[in-house]
Each structure stands twice: as C-alpha cells, then as structure tokens.
Image (cartoon, rainbow, N blue to C red; front, top):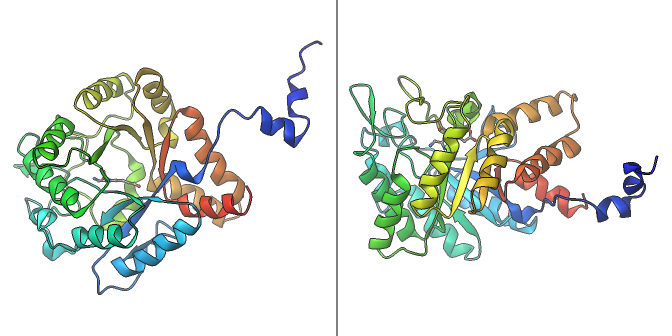
Length: 325
Ligand code: PBG
C-alpha cells in the first residue's frame, strides 16, 4: 500500500495543516428579536437560549457578543397585534420601535454590521409576506410597500437590507428605490432560494407571525426543487444583490454548493430556527454533545460553500472559539 491517507491525520499539527475549511466568528450573523421598549426579556420556548429583548437589553446582548468576536447581527421585530394592519403601515413609520432601535444600536455600536428584515409578515394582520387580496398574495402591489420599508431602514442607518419575502423582482425594485433615495451604499442580502419549509416554526412562535390563512407556497420555493434556485440566483445577481442566500441551510447543503459553483457573489446560508431547535433538543436530552455537534453543523455549511452563516448558535460559537475550540 503506497497511499495511506491516515498519514496526514497522525497528529493534531498535521491535521491542522491540511484542514480545508475554516470557520471563524467573523463568518457568522446572529439573529436578534426586538420587542417594545417597556417589555421585559421574553424567553422563546421553542428556541431555548434565545430571547425577545427591548432595545436596551439588546444593547447588553450585543456588547456580550462583541466581546466574543460576533460583530454582525440581523434584527427582527415582534410587533404587537394592535399595530398590525393589511398594508403593514407600521413598518415605515419613521418613529416606530424597530427604526428607533436601529438608530440607537448603530449610534451606540458604530462598528457593528447590522442587517434588517424586509417583509410584510411581522407587521401584517394577514401574517403573509405580501399584500393579500381575496386569498391571493399580490406581487407587484407589494413592491412599493417593501421599498418604503427598506428606505426607512436605510435612513435609520442599517448596513444590509434583508428582503426575506420572495416576491418576484423585489431586489431590482429595492436597489433602484434605495439608489434614487441616495442610499447606494446600503447593501442587499437577497433571500434567493428561500424554501417553503416546516423548519421556520420556532421563528414564527418568536414573532407570532404565522400566516392567518393558507401557507407560503405561492412565493417560497418547493423543497423538491434545485434547478429553480439557479433561476432565482441569476435574477437576484442581475438585479444588483450583494449576497445570495439559501434558506434553510442544513437541509439544503446541495443548493448552497450549487449556487457557490454557479455564481460569483458571496453565498449566505440561513441556519434556521427549526435546525437550531432540533440540535438543542437532542443536546438537552444528552443525546448529542453540544460543544462538538454544534460547530460540526456550522462547518458543514462552510464546507458546502457558504461564505456567511446566519445562525442562532453564533453567540455560543463565539464563546467556544474564544475558549480555544
Ligand atoms: C419571514 C421570515 C421567516 C424567517 C425569516 N424571515 C419565516 C417565514 O418565512 O415564515 C425564518 C427564520 C427562521 O426560521 O429562523 N419573512
């Protein structure tokens, strides 16, 4: 036997030398849930260890994350029912608590990279990502609403706009609207291949944002499809996206790999709430070891081709990395 692959595995130093994939805190974006200023931290039952925070509690959370090497965040608002309506009008009111928090956090932590969510569902009394008429999710009529939301966020100082709605043409529409309003430096991370997945359940619990009727299958992608992700990717790239995202991540590693090989933009992977919940639950039962199973899960996404990972594990990974992984 001349070839013995085990020779390159015989010591830690050698293993480190031939290691192909690197995972660092700098690759991660930590999702944060924002609630109104007067509310106490709220533990999300289906996302153990994740809380809804008001803006001053969020500032403490961000400070802890920065100390662990996590500098990128994506912010989602939990909007009280009384502020929701059919047109998501609260989303672009200049003094709403989401935009207030963006201004507050960017002022307090100017060096962080802050990403927003652009979609109607947290603000919509229908719980859909687009405007609903007679049970139908309207595409073109939704775009101006998304643009108002995106411009308001850009004005508040957001670094990256995150359209998560899957309406056709919204990346180009938002790019043009942002540019016309003077925000040509505001980035767009397109939710390019976002699937109609069962694994968003805990997130919808966190925001109480589940659709009131129907499902999201007329806009989010069919989990059975892969070639279709290339159509979405081509469109988003041509429309001016700065990142292409695949969501969920763990169950769609093949799609991450495909987009990475076919496209030149950085690829992001959203390690979604259900993927977090299932690993956490197994670890809580002692069926898996958290400190080894968690980084292995994140590494699989990097190996598949993700440049950036949005993950609820970010803070824990930062702590693990700091302690010497
Ligand atoms: C909605 C949105 C969802 C997530 C991010 N933005 C849920 C959905 O489409 O219903 C899911 C994130 C997660 O599960 O972690 N615009």
